[in-house]
Length: 219
Image (cartoon, rainbow, N blue to C red; front, side, top):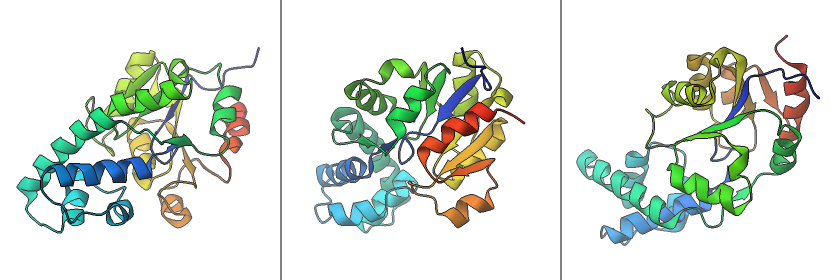
């Protein structure tokens, strides 16, 4: 048996474990079309993925009314719940890495709807791998640490003994606010420079580099 170096491994979902950009862009366009903004295009929506939902939906529709933005954001949640992320796929080495680290309790904190995440995990035979999932409907958005603290509560672990893995500078800020160690991956939204400026505990060249990093433990 391996020596457990962390109480749990916690992950961001979109752009970290799974590529969901196309599905999120498609659902953004559906949201706008269903609300009568027919000029919204997939290409335009795709370039705006990653920002705050209401703002990026407004930008995609070419309007500036924050009240409409809030209504669109709520409808977007409904569309994501209804449509899910049917074409989402794992980034290279994610499946092998999760398998190699399967003895660790694992959780997900994401800005996506929990149902959409669960659908993707079910489809890839990974639902059982994650003992806890905190989604958009469960906690304050990042960089608030609430989602990570809720995950740790569900898993019965101390955040200080956990690792949070993400692709976005906001993920690193969130982990630090919650008291976890932080790991950045380079295949998502965040650039090397932006991630470096947040000073995570490590930046992974490849996702599988997480395995030796976890095995080294908290030095």
